[in-house]
Length: 109
Image 1 (cartoon, rainbow, N blue to C red):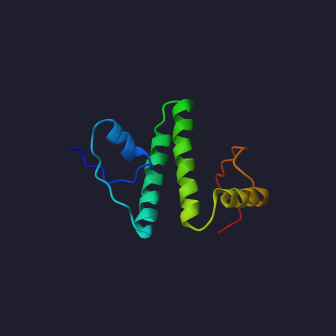
Image 2 (image 1 turned 180 degrees about the horizontal axis):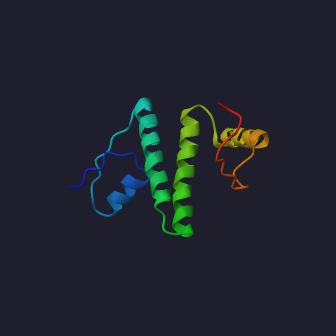
Image 3 (image 1 turned 135 degrees about the vertical axis):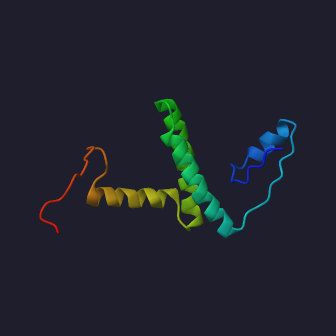
């Protein structure tokens, strides 16, 4: 019997049951939930990094986005607020569209 010990999407237990198996689950405390969301973020970002093509990359980015929604909520915010903050930061500092790679800054010691 495989042991996973990880946060899963809400419908995964139902999907496991529909396959004729019995999942063993528990509900996390708020503190555990935040910790597991953060761990899951690393897992999903690693899967994005390992994506072999754009289709896989978009699939993994969707998982990362789902985690951003959940993390915003546990921090008492919303995805819309996160997007608002992102836009404000992009307005002040720009985004990453220009592909600028900073090598060094002269005159600073």
